[in-house]
Length: 439
Image (cartoon, rainbow, N blue to C red):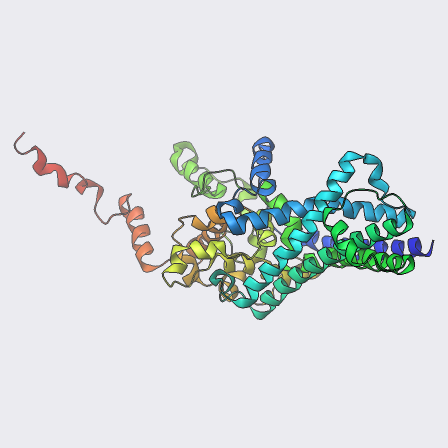
C-alpha cells in the first residue's frame, strides 16, 4: 500500500506540472494568428509516411535507420510504461500479461529495443561531443543548446539502462523463486545470469530500485521535454499532420491584397465608398513580431529538432551568407518565450521595446534567402521555413518600404510600366521590328 501511495503522489505531481506547462503553451498559441486546416485524409497519409514511417529520415540509410529504430522503439516501450502506471496505481504486477502472445511480442520487442536505443544514445552522444558533425554547430547553437541536447540524450540512455535493469532483476527474481515469468525477455534473460548468484531478497531490492528509477525518470523527462529542444517528441507528429499541403515554393496570396486588386479591377467598385467597418480597420501586412505569426509557424518552432539539416543544404548558408533557416525557426520560439508572458499578463498592447524582426532576425538574413525551399524539403518534421521568411519580407516591403535597392527599382517599374523592366509598354515589341523587315 505504501508503494501505491508514493506512486500516486508522484503521478499527481507529474500531472500537475505537466498541466501547468501545457496551459502555458495553450496561452502562447492563443496569441498567434489563424492558419486554415482542411483535407484531413491527405494529412493523415502524410503523417503516416513522414512521421510514423520516417520517410524523410530514411533518405540517409545508416544514421536515418538508427534514428527511425529509436523512434519505433520508443513507441513500443511506451506501451510498457503505460503498464507500469497501472501496476503502480493498483499494486498489480505485469497487469497486461493477460494479452498472451501479443504481450510477449511487445515485451520482447521493448527489451531488444531498450538495448538498441541505449547503444544508439552512446553513438549520438559521441557524435555531438566529438564535434565532428558540422551541422550541429552554428551561430544559433549556443552552449545551452548543446548542453540541453546532451542532457536529453543522457536521460534517454539512463531510461533504457533502468528498463533493462528492471527486466533483468525481474527475470532473475522469478527464476530464484520458481515463479512463472510473465512475458519474454531476450536480452534481460542473458543479463540475468550475471546476477543469478544473488539471494532472492537482493534480487527483489534490485528490481524495486530499477522500477522506481525508470518510472521516476519517465515522470521527470515528461516534464523536462516542454522546456527542451526535445519537445519535438510531443510536437513533431502533430506538426507533420498540419503540414502545408501546397507544393513547395507556392506562395499564398494575402487576402487583403487580393481584395484590393479585385476592387481595382471592378469599375463599379473603384470609386465607391468603402463600408464603415473597413474604414475603421487598419490592415497590418506581414510579420514583425511574435503576435503576427500564425499558430502553424509557432508549432513549427516547437517541433524543430535543431538537427541542422535545413541549414546544411541552404545555398545561401553554404556560400557564406548570414542566413540559417534553423536560426529563423529557433528565434520564433525564443521570442515567444520572451514576450509571450508579457502579452498574456498585460494584453495585446504590451511592448517590451524589442521585436522578432530586427532584434532576433536581421533584414540581411531574410534577403539572403533564394526561396529554393531546399530547407523545407530536407526538414524531417515538415517545417516550412520559407513561409516565415516571406512573411517577414512582406512586412519590410509593405510596412517599412525597406526592400533592397534592386527590388525597389523592380517595384517602380511595375508601377510605371506594368512590368519589372524599365521599358515603356509601347516599346515592348521594338525588339521584333527587324524580324519582319524582309518578310
